[in-house]
Length: 144
Image (tube, rainbow, N blue to C red):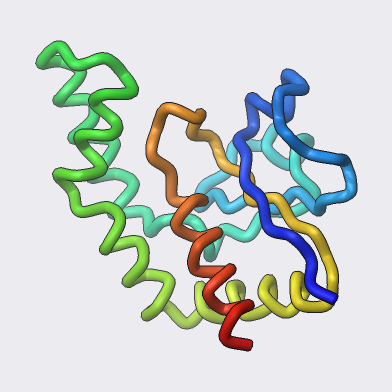
């Protein structure tokens, strides 16, 4: 029996907007979590968060784009494209030993029937690594 994998964001959980049934293990996937994250999730797997340098570069580019007049979501999504976030994050998942180990352990838990919800900060209108992570996790489950 295999569990389910879903995704959501912290504010949705905090404001009871997340589409969760309450049986999921809330797994934070935040590289550098604020202290209050731990009050929202059951655990955090920082190894599955984007690398610090990629986060910093994308954040800086988004700030630059906001200064040029883009809205927050638009700047975030444009910065995601301009920094090649998707391919760099997926390469991190493929190449980093700690990320590989964390992904393998999470896949094993889901394969054993545990339902998990991947959680980070980005709302529905911003592109987010948790969607890529969910895809990679589901791929692992299909090939296991």
